[in-house]
Length: 279
Image (cartoon, rainbow, N blue to C red; front, side, top):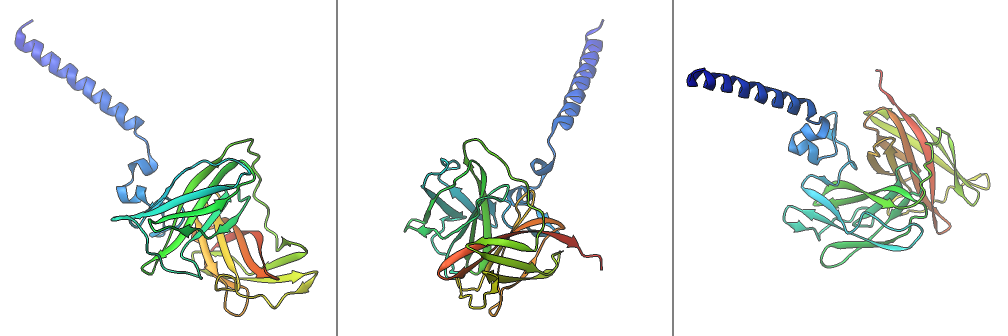
């Protein structure tokens, strides 16, 4: 065999090997966020062209940096974190509803909901005492405003131990808020448009009208989407426990409505199904 013929055959064999390697690479390449544009992977994902809050630790040039992602069960722990911007750790925050930072902590099966208000030191580190009674994976939401722009960043927090997940409760119009307080919900949850949800508080069966402000509003409502815990936080009407909320997609949501009465903050939890607008 001539030298030139050997070179031709070698080139053909090399081309075959390269073709097989490229085919294997295409088949093995992961899909989803790994193939997304850098900005899409950085954000939590889009619904209808708009970013849904609470799905990512980084968004809009800000990043949530926690000192730890693990704490022990049923032990009071100092949870510390920072909000980093393009030029470093942020130290200037707007006050929204009497606080510069709202920290929501809830297990991924919606158990153990907490609404906390950390303190910040001069260097921009936020800290709060946190106790999580049960093992599992929790979601931590940092809800804040900088220069008039509202942001929600989130990260996971792990509590080691025997995790016993709870099923999503079925929708119910009535919720127990403890100490013979009950809360009733009314209104339809519709996806992709503003929905009006009204709540009535009763104590010992009697309607409670004298509900004072709590953090600058008569009530606070946090809604979390089942599955990925996409986040909504809205506040009540000035005169009554009525909320305007926009659910981004159809499906099940867990609602946590908080109010204060007789000096104590109470939480009523509901499951609602946001229906798709058919009009």
